Image 1: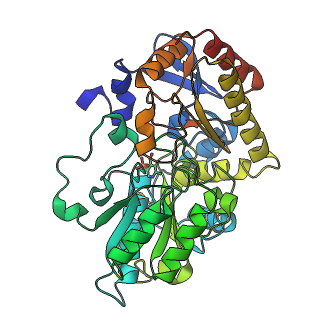
Image 2 (image 1 turned 120 degrees about the horizontal axis):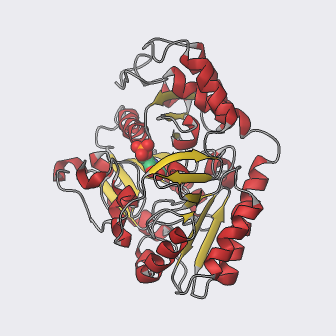
Length: 411
Ligand SMILES: Cc1ncc(COP(=O)(O)O)c(C=O)c1O
C-alpha cells in the first residue's frame, strides 16, 4: 500500500513517526496490535460520536445483516433515513444518499452548476476557502486542508489546470476577500462552498456575522451557498452548524456521523434544487451501493441515540472540560476552540482565524506533545492541522487522565 496506509494522514508523516496498527475499539478506547490501550480523540475522524462499537449500532447491524447486505433497489431503511435527515437538518427538504463525503461534495458541486447554468451558462465558477477540505475531487483539491496541509502539498500532481480553472480561492473569515471576488467575477459564480466551522486546518470558528454575510452576498448574486457539513453535521449540534449559527445554506453535504461508522455520505437541500437530480431531473448521479442497508441501519441507530435529551449539552461540556484542563496545565502558548463535540488546540501565541494564521503553529512543540501523549495512552489526530472529537462514551475520568498526561509532558 502506498505509504503503508489507505488514507494519507494515517501515516504519521508530519510527526516523523510511524502509524499505530489497531485491532479493536470499544467506547472511548482503542487497542493496538501489542495490546496497548489508548483514549481516542480521533473517533475515525469524526463518525464515532457515540464511541466505538456502541451496543445500539451493533444490534442494528446484527439485525440487518441476516437480511442481505445489498439489493441495489429501494428499501424502507432509505426512506427512514431520508425522513430523519429532513427532520433534523433545518435546510434540507430532499436528500440523496451516497457512499462518502467526497462523493457528496462532488455531486453537490455538479448540482449547483446544473442549477445556476439553466439561466446563465457563464455561472460555473466555485468559490472555496483556503484550508477547507472537501474531499479529494479534482476541482476542490486546491489549497485544501487535512492531509494536503499536513504533507505541505500546495496542490496535487494529476489535477489539471482545466479541472481547477473554475475554482476561485478566498481567505476564510474575510468578508473583504469575498466581496472583491464577487465584483471581479460578477455573474460567474455558481456556488460558494465552505466548512461552516473549519475542521481540516485545526478547528477554526467563523467570526460572528461571517456566515450571515456569506448568506447575504450569495443570495444577492443568485449564487448557491453550500455548507460542507461532512464533519460538522450532527457534530457541533444535532442540526449541524446551520442550526447552531442559524444560517441556512441552499445545499448541504453530510458524511461521517450519518453513517454511524459505516461508509456513507449524503447531499440535500431545497426541493427546487434537488428536483434537478436524476431521475427526477437531468443532473446525473448514481451509486451501486448508495443507501446500502447496513450503512442505513448503523446510521439510523446513531441518529436515534444522538436525539436523546441533553446529548449535545453533555458533549460540549466534555469538550470544554478537556480544553480548559489542557489550557491550565500545558506550559506553552495555546490557541483553543470548542464547538459541540469538536475541539482544537494549536501551539501558537496568536489567534487563528484562517489558513494563513496556521503557519504560526509551532510544529516542533506539537510533535513533542503528540509523542508524549501517545506514550501515555492518548490518541489525538497525528497532525497539528486536524480537529479533535469527543464522544458520548468519554468519561470525566478519561478526560482527567488526559489532562494529567498533558501536565506530565515537558515541552
Ligand atoms: C469537511 C469535509 N468534507 C469532505 C470530506 C471527505 O469525506 P470522505 O473522506 O468521506 O470522502 C471530509 C473528510 O474528512 C471533510 O472533513
